[in-house]
View: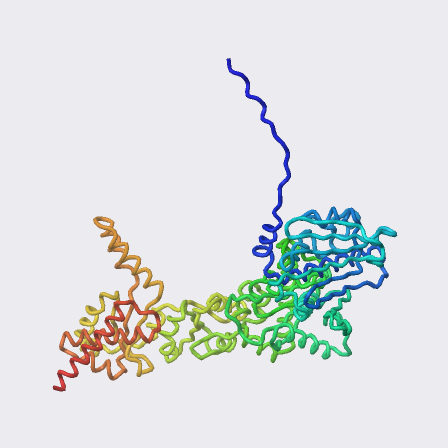
Length: 610
């Protein structure tokens, strides 16, 4: 008989936390540097003051920092903690006093939300000493909490005289290896770095006996009043230069009341590589969150650097970046609108500023114009392009050339630019990022303009044919040239075109080369019937064309060569020179041909002279 299985027994257990391991995890994976310990202490002090103002709205409260090399102390006049609060919040990892029921409805007023900030102090000290007195409980005693890096802590009640007023004092005795972050000058610098825009007064004392100095003596520059708009503009530009280290081309004020965001965007005075995104300086409720917050602006806005202070953006657990949510997405879109508005104002009222801006940042504007019809209509006539008439705007170019031809690559433009210009064709280099797409949209702005892709047949159609007698006289040479260049899928023709100094023009496209390469590889890999079919298809692949210029003296001499070997060598040399002038990457076979033809011609010349 089979007995039923005995019911499995289970016991609920509690996770055991190795505090040293957790601190190591924070230092290597959550926080970017031990310096954040001071930011976390300042943040806790600011949140305590915020809670105190909820209890006493008209109180005069502040934060005091002290560092003399042997200790670091942060004291605030905040709401403080009772003994029960100390056990609940300081001794429980992950629980924050900002989550208490009595302040739950005010969570949006606090910077911190995660309840692990105090652990960052173990990055620079082995013990955290906290003395606190609650402002919520009348006649509350002072409470002392000592937490140690090994995970142990002690709590005791102190007489009221230990802390006569409500608030909290956190004292750290730095480890020997933490001197870099706890020296008086460094503590003061960190306080300025993180807290320069805090709304509560913060002072610093280095223990030398002098007067404590203010850390944040002034309001944010956009929150101050100025006698004139010009004075305001100069003050914002000076602040941007102080923060970022460059003189802005212009400053754009940013103000989004819905999320409590204020700040400035500084327009970079010089171009930056395409796609390179600068980090932006983001404060949340006055506390510096990040200097590298790329996510605050869209990718195309790499021509500005921003410094902003916001109320409603959510920091991540490390409080060193922003949490990606619907609010951040809405802020990003709204700030993008502010940048578009600035461009529109410059286009409408300050052409000189717009010109300097476009000279430095036309690539960023082209990126925006591709996706933004309003910017396209507004700025496409102003944007510079490389053309056969030099660098000019499309508006200027279209006045001279009603039909605008655009190349698909830079190398194609370089192949044809000189000859197309001599033939009176208007060609725009469409090989740069966004340019080809924008040129094709020119008729939306200038309906009378016609835009078309440059086709090799279009160019060759504008080259003058030679007379029949000349072509017959050169036919033997042309046959030798075609035979020599068949390995490169290249045909040879004789035409006349300007400038006469150009002996030959190689007309080819990247797409045609790719198609020929694909067909050749497919044929090599297939046999039998499939090989024959692919071979037939290969015959239909577009071929390159070497067009010899009958107006060039060298070509007129070459076509009279009756020695087959020399004819082949001269044709290879003309092909190699035309390939190099196209500035496209040479294939190994072409490089070999150029070297071989040069040496063969040199050897022929030496034999002739001997």
